[in-house]
Image (cartoon, rainbow, N blue to C red; front, side, top):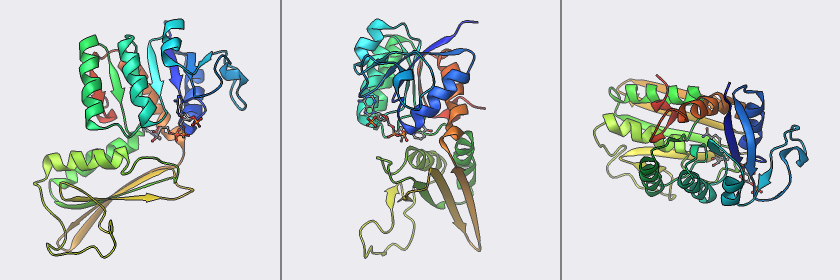
Amino acid sequence: MEKIRIVLAGPRGRMGREAVALIQETENFELVAAVDRIHDGEYISDIEGMPNVKAPIYTDIERCFQAVKADVLVDLTTPEIGRIHTKKALEYGIRSVVGTTGFSEEDLKELKELAEEKGIGCIIAPNFAIGAILMMKFSQMAAKYFDDVEIIEMHHDQKLDAPSGTGLKTAELISEVRETKQQGHPEEKELLTGARGANYDGIRVHSVRLPGLIAHQEVLFGGFGQGLKIRHDSYNRASFMSGVKLAVDTVMKVDTLVYGLENIID
Ligand code: NAP
């Protein structure tokens, strides 16, 4: 069986550590190198708490791509470096699976053009949890019947971007089927700035950041005399790994940029 050769960026991170375990336990995946901010010239197995994997570590992604033959970059870092990694991978003809969140519309447009120019796949998924994808799909279904909706996304307090990629994506999907509408009283006033949350096409999006949380979201719909709440919880980072596996297998078969796991599951 031919293995998919993977370079992992961000192996010491919370998602990265889960991804190392996933790659190790998946028969057709092979970790050929890692890109880290530190540990240049060492091996994954040299890092405390890591499994005995003899994959070399590079701090410079270009040096990594020049030295190692790779099929897919899996990026689980930060938006600033993740966008550079993804661009470099595509330039080197290497497919990408990106879990890093916080990319701008401009980043996505530039990466899409590059993927198309190179004719290779790139999957960027703000949420790899299959349950979260279903939550977004169900929310879009419900929004056809309930046009008053607020999103509350809740994450751990180390998260850098707000709202979350999933919160934003949910708002985008809802606004595709919902007439633009400013919710609440037309003359409402915020006594504290931000009290009503961010505004996406009239949909209010609230971001909660607390230690102890992982990734959770509620989509609240209100109608006359009734309410509907759709909620998803990721209780640990392993919840994202079946989505990463699906994305790595799928990225080998597509030749464009796909944004969102919902576009690769039925
Ligand atoms: P994390 O624990 O902070 O891990 C980020 C890792 O990236 C750290 O090891 C960090 O190293 C490393 N890093 C930073 N700059 C780097 C560079 N220049 N080169 C290489 N590595 C670098 O964060 P996390 O919770 O694992 O999340 C990682 C990303 O995935 C975030 O964008 C998060 O929002 C996203 N995420 C996505 C999903 C999804 O389903 N798509 C789910 C959860 C999280 P240092 O510690 O040395 O800075």
